[in-house]
Length: 84
Image (cartoon, rainbow, N blue to C red):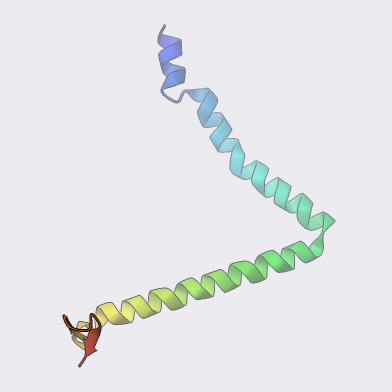
């Protein structure tokens, strides 16, 4: 009875599966890169592009957060934001 409750509550069987998953993913990625080197170039370029876009979006949000005086109250007639 105790063993069943332990397995239902995420016992050692589940945790071992979760701990092995990142290693299996890395091994599969390495095998794919060995078989197809252009896949690595595509993956690296895609990750760099996504990282750059994320940094640009964060920088834009950070700038608008840092300078709240740039945006004033919302215009009720047009529904657009007025800029100081």
